[in-house]
Length: 349
Image (tube, rainbow, N blue to C red; front, top):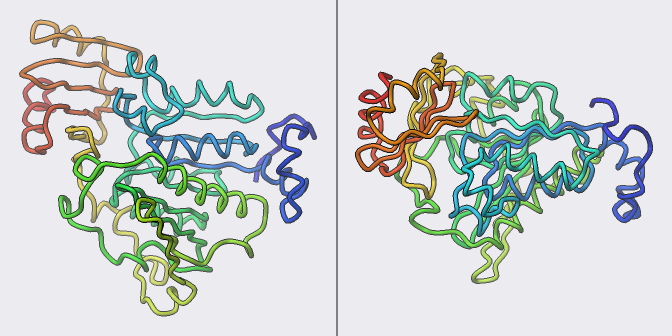
């Protein structure tokens, strides 16, 4: 773990949590030296970032590809209407709010996609990875990166009024692929667009993820939960599934045989429908775009908005948001073929 981010033993603001016996002042000091990666800054990522920044984690890296939208605010509690009106990147908006919450913590916002080309660099130097994503492809990728690098990570997911979470300690516990041997086919599961989501379940799952991270970062691996915890808040049910024998029972290609097909690009798509947004993300690996030059070319074709972070085009009843790395969000469709056609027509990609 890295150096203290607090500039010394200025831990008075954390006195209430230090008074919890198993955690104590030594746990707080360890927390202040730790570094965390939060993958995704939607509902779960919002809450995870708040909890860990308020708790005094020394360094928090937040990676998210999306922009704040008005429909996010009911469950993404860091954001407000001004963030949505400005269409700020979620990582940037989160960092601005978090720095006002705790100036002792170093916040690194990264506006980018998590994919096979980027995941290992995002994991560099961190002590724990937290899942704030909304899709299984990214979770399989996180799982492989964590196992390959030997970094603990905490899975979490929410839908409707239900959520679940589990903790993976490489070399000690089973991994995500032990639990779920293959990624569910695209379109085979409900999403927050079709099933909805209630904010309280986000708070419960994020809190369970955050306490697991605090155990890991404070040096208390013996306290890490060995269960897959499933909560259903509408019916008021909680289930725990014992995973202590998962590693021994599963002949896992990832954590036992060292196979990483998602990192190798043998698994995973280059386009994906985003949860709840009627939006398709199209990736263009290796592409770099000058937004100013692109804006000049597109102005005759439709309404163009340019910011330091993205360019947005309104055309044919769709909205294309283009980032410098070529990543494009095509809003107004959930059809991948239509999204790729629009990218080819307007961006030449």
